[in-house]
Length: 371
Ligand code: GLU
Image (cartoon, protein in one colour):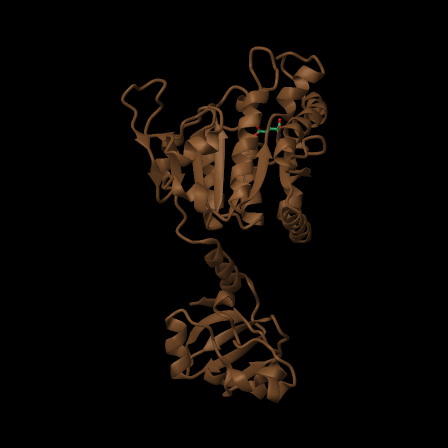
């Protein structure tokens, strides 16, 4: 399982406040941040994309504004976050500079990930940052978030970000080891759970309601976050990040609970294609194409026998077998008019018929969700 860290294409790493800020004096643990920076640089060096979701703004803001550990009202917490976020970003910037990794701050509210257009915008920005070789550093925009529009904790925010960025691995670093079947602080024979294949009600019950003192999330929110990320096909690891270079430790088999998704990210997109689009037309296919689709292949024009509806290139269509059964749905690479012209033809003839060289496939297998 620890191999996952090395093989993931895109990692989202979430850092809990308790790892960053020394409880006794409220100071930032620069050595720890330097270790994480080295970890991130190593992942980047392997060609992996990394996104960092870090808590710690409020905890650091307490120090900056001399608030000590007295209870804070909502607006005071928000003020602390505003001050602390500067220190937080600065600390990462400084630690990543020797690795020549630029840091880019992104502050998000729930609306930014729930509303489709803002979601797509934020996703575009993250992708652009990764293309530029920068490390997106994300936190909740605590200053404007009211209690109704709060993620409430960065575990959930990190899961949303993982889905938004189509990440295949989410690592929740905090001061808990992972999941036990009972509370290890009260029951000495609590058994550690290294792998969770399904989040059942029993697993949720095991999480209990333990809270970490510095951050706002406990095991319950971590399990909730894991659930969200799993639906996006993302592996999730919960581990104690206290040591220096926590990702390196994880690669070397440090204690950790892994949550395994049943779907990979591509399947999640297919799920979206299959379930959440309104089909604009229908392609009827022959028995050869039906068999090819069942083997996971793309739909070629040669296998299409009829085209119905009114769709543009990229629209969702239903795929019908000759027996009138729906075989699946997919995004068609051609419009109705062009699809009619090339149906039954070999892909090599497309250019002659249409006057341009389109895709060889009528529906590429990546754009296809079988029923
Ligand atoms: N956004 C908060 C902060 O940076 C942390 C929330 C959390 O710990 O989950 O201080």
